[in-house]
Image (tube, rainbow, N blue to C red; front, side, top):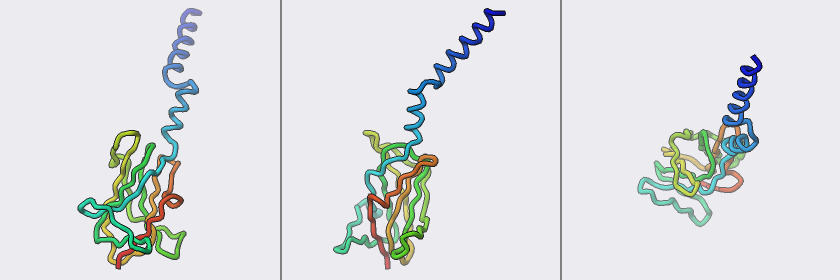
Length: 150
């Protein structure tokens, strides 16, 4: 009986060591749920040419464009918003891209692309929020992308 109990205790210890009861294993898990870092955002037309800014810093949008976001880390989804001019707090969701639709570029960089059918009239700032479960990163503090279409 003592031998069976000893073997049971040893088995539990081995399983605990193999499946993540160590501090190092938990560190990896927390890196996997850390907020991603946005490295670059660009808007491109159907021909994949980057849309340029006018002298005032605004991008004149075509009827369709793509918003490309290069990031590091992991995401569960990406939300794309337009913040109408003068309403800095009212974000209008224009689309969502799930993590499965992003792809790796190499050197730990990844890209997610949103294809935007631009409404007839729009004026505001593009904001991207990348989520990794409950942790997120917003482009608002780093990228100021003013767009319009009349």
